[in-house]
Structures are given as structure tokens and as C-alpha cells.
Length: 328
Image 1 (cartoon, rainbow, N blue to C red):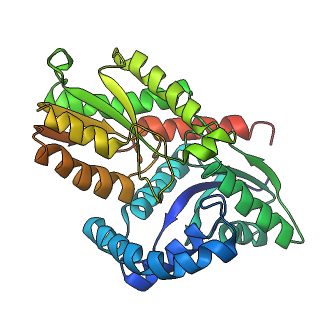
Image 2 (cartoon, rainbow, N blue to C red; image 1 turned 60 degrees about the horizontal axis):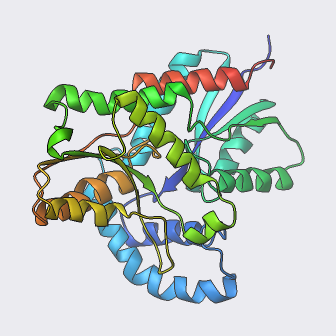
Image 3 (cartoon, rainbow, N blue to C red; image 1 turned 45 degrees about the vertical axis):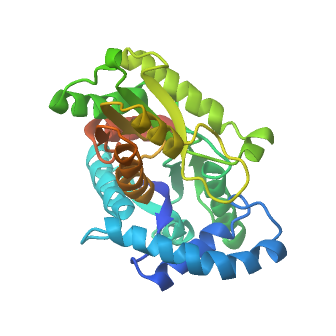
């Protein structure tokens, strides 16, 4: 019998705890990646170590503390649940672990553990439905770093994206419809809205060839078709802007405030680009954007939970793993 196939789910990462030193360590690793901030380190690091490591890190620490769970950060808790559910789906022929691109457990450490345990085949699964140089490409960078540093190696396969997979679209639709089943479908004829909010990237990255915005558009259109909605009912927006250069628009926070000022009676927000709930969905959408909407005069605000360990999403992951390990 062959050794099990290694499967590593890789997400962005999280601080180890909601304290300033832990958040600073995490932000330093994240923001020194030139895929994230493409500036020469000699220019960027002094800014990072002064303004970012003090003001921004303190604000981030407060935000993490506002959503931290007894078991850890939301991203860590949901990722562990995804791994447990996927192990149950795949069975003994696979060894499923998770690694983080930044923070712990680091992808390289997880791979090293599998290698030392005798595994020789591994599928790396970036947990990003849409490809971007700021996400999937950074995972491949970390994989390349591990390969360069190791004398022995796996046989590798990787997953690029699943932004248009029918099972992914169905999993997203079912998350939204679960809220509608519990609270009723929004009255779109009366101007109530669904926002599909994706993490943004700088416009300059798109201009250099990052396919991310186009893949977001494809996901949005497929989800609209599945839900039976038009573009005026289900709008696409972008969140989490960082820095001063232009980012993809419309910005979620701006559109939320506009809809609030129009006294929209109900706004549902779902984040298709996030495989698991995290700071950007729970605090940014669930708290900051909620407040912007209601303070501007809006009515009811619903944050639709991310895919997390929902049955349709775990089923999709299992199918993707089996498909990409076929022949092993």
C-alpha cells in the first residue's frame, strides 16, 4: 500500500494572539513580502518600522481583540474545522494539514514535517478562489523557498484557483440562501441589495497583468445567474484598502455608506473571495461596514458567513483534491 498523499490547505495567516508584539511580528512578515508591497526594502522598511509598526499595528491589535475567540483567531478556528471536515471526507489515503503563508504554522514547517514522516507526494491547495499575485503567487513563492532549502523533495502538485467551479458557485449560493431562508429574500424591487465584496488590490497590479479582478467578475456573474439576480441587485465591490495608491473600486465601505444615505431598508453582504471568516469579514464587514451603513441612515444589515466548513464547500475541496491527485 502506498504512503498517504499529503494535502496542505494554505491560507493567509494570523497573529498568534491579539497582543501588540504578536500583531507586529505578523504584520512585519506580511508587509515585507514584495508581492504585497512592491517597494525596495531600503525604502519601505523605515516606513514599516515607524508608522506601520506603531499606529497601524495598535489599531490592528484592537480589531483582532474584538473578534478573537477562546480557541484563537476566527481564521485559525475555521481553518482547523475545514481540515477536520476534509479529513473525514477523504479518508485514510490522504494526510490533510494546513499551513499559513504568514505566521504559524508556516507552510515550510508543515512540509518539512510531512517530508520527515516519509510522505513523498503532496498537493498544495491555496485557499483563494480567485488567483492573484498577492495570494496564490505568494504561496508558490513560499513553496519555492522550501524547495530551494531542502535536499530531499516531494512530488508536487498545486491548485491555481476555483473561481468558476460550479460546486464553488453552488456553495456560495447556498450560504446566501441560508440567510434568505431564515430571514426572507431581500425585496430587490424595493431597492434592497446584495453586495459581493472581494478583497481589493492596487490598480497598478491589475495594470501589470494580475488576473484577479477579471476572475472576481466571472465569479460575480456566475453567482448572479445562480441566484437569479441582475447587476443592479447584486453589486460587486472591493474592501480592505491599504496605503495611498489607487485600489480597485467601487470600495465596499463607500458603497455601503451611499446605500445607507439612500435609506436602503436592507443590505446583505457576502465575501466570495474569502474561504473562511477572518478579521476582514468579521470586523471590517460585520462591524465597520455595518456601522457605516446604519449611521448613514440604512436599515437592516446582514453579514452572510463565509464558506468555512459548510458541507458544500468541503465537498468541493474533496472533489478538487481527488481530481488533482488522480493517478497518484
